[in-house]
Length: 355
Image (tube, rainbow, N blue to C red; front, side, top):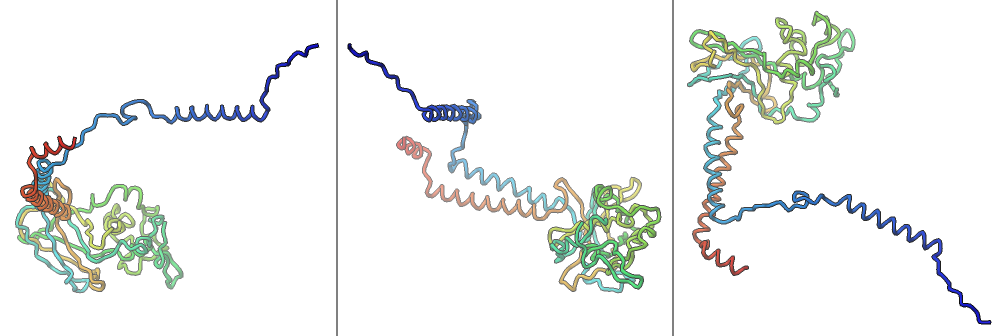
């Protein structure tokens, strides 16, 4: 009997089935991932937007450089001339604290608009890290050593305000008079500090009597009077809310700095309604703050603002410097172009050959 051939069908092993399934899943995941990460087919996403790039030639670069120099020069000069300022160096004032030094200030022209009075210090490093940290914002959250506590005859008491910043508060006093009639120039502390300072950062202890609120504290070692005696005639300017104190506690970033002291009061019916008139003024200073021991200097400054803001000699000088550099390089480029440059026709021939 003839044998009937049997057809054998090959079947995959279970391991091969698993591998094929895994490969299929991986391929599917890869295609899904590629489609998910593929940017949208737009000109913006595919970076196919029309673009324009200037061709830098002598005929475009040289006029541009000269143009920048010509424009920047008057801007720099205007910045230097826009603001009027009078600076009085009174470092040499070294009379006893109960006496005053008198200085004559001559203003040759009117200081129109808002007039600001500053004091300035040179070579005073308020930006030192240990100095800046020596304060207590939670009392007015840092380390106030070595001025946190003071040993007194009645025991250990808290210094208010504590810290090196508060202990070294500037305490010179100023008074300005018109020399013709000895009239005091009206100025005010209102508007000197930011509203956020008095509303949030600085607050006096609760209670109607400020002296009683600070009863268990002592003044800083270098202070001549307690915190509640800074301005007893004005409750909104006494204690931790004192304007001079707040201004001093805002430490400066550079060793030579100025701090706003007062603002001119421009009453409608006074000679100061348009600003500080030209003339001769007498400045009386009670110098209590020593600076010669560390090689510093002290100044009293009268200044105005303009369309460019406050006094900024650096900005004006920077504009003039850039203007000079542009004119210099523009001249160099022009000489090089006149001596070694090629004509437009030659440049066109070269571009055609390169193609």
